[in-house]
Image (tube, rainbow, N blue to C red):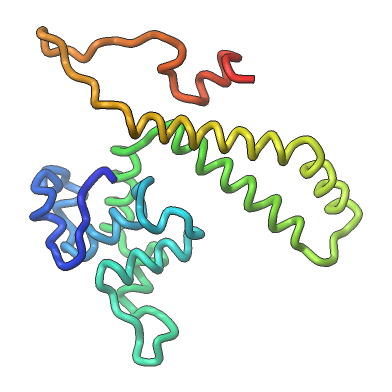
Length: 193
């Protein structure tokens, strides 16, 4: 994760640098925890649907459910529904800070796979939908799954690599080897088959 989050700990105390970013400085500690848990690529809720992810992030951040336990109280609902401007600005900034082509590719692949699964599970398909389902499942689904697996492997390998050190001149070494390009760039360069 880009920043540390720990239950029963103040997120701003765990990450003093957060206050240096104006969009984060405006938030309460609870709101900042929500932003991290809902927006980070490596959130513990990353495998949930976007709505479920937001709901769980709000609960983990300390937002409470109504007495009947069916939904979040108004403040939490507004947060999850994107109606809290300062939080939405912080989420946008957070996503800008952590942007990574490979993770974005993985998110896009997951969205495509979800659409295919939803189409496959639809009980009464029209002729057009049936034709689309067959087209997607024959020859394309296996390629999407293989591509997803490759992206996940690449991301796992990157997590195991040590951080790149700066040189004596305090500049980050430039790498131009094609295998160091983001996965999407490798695809575009025709490196992966």
